[in-house]
Length: 224
Ligand SMILES: [Zn+2]
Image (tube, rainbow, N blue to C red; front, side, top):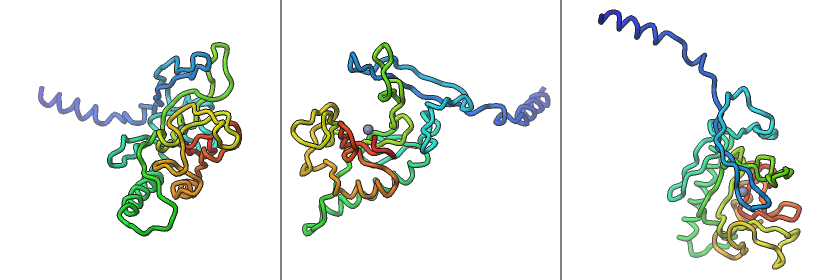
């Protein structure tokens, strides 16, 4: 009996399970409804990785909506965020350096450089259809850059998203996050170190994008 058990264990362990188990893609998503102005149709999607559709992959980076392709970034004192695996390590490094520089800065009385931005809050990977054309129900039909883990929001409470804002001024309408002010601690400006270093990693800043919106918290490969 013992021998039979041993034999069975040996047999099971010899079955090459990994080659049979296909990698799967999992994510939870929603649609932004432009009529109700809220997120609707929450659902969890799971399918084989080989069945990924074009809209589930970012063409520029190859990053996907799959949570299996995201890596967590941890900064002490902040809620961890996930970002696409090809960007996560560089981002973690950059953010840690920014935190350290900021701490050094506040200990130094004489500093003539532009003030550094404290990192207070991050939002990364978050799957949702918040852009593209609108369907008959008023829902957006394309995944945002956050959906692929290629967009990062920094300090949303000091760096809001504004509409009706070709150039920034009092006419701009705040639609998400808190008010932006160039001389406020936590607000990001074109002169901020973080903008400079994010650009070196291939990101564009949402505070500098063309069009009606200015998204001061937002960084992504396109800025949108
Ligand atoms: Zn964003």
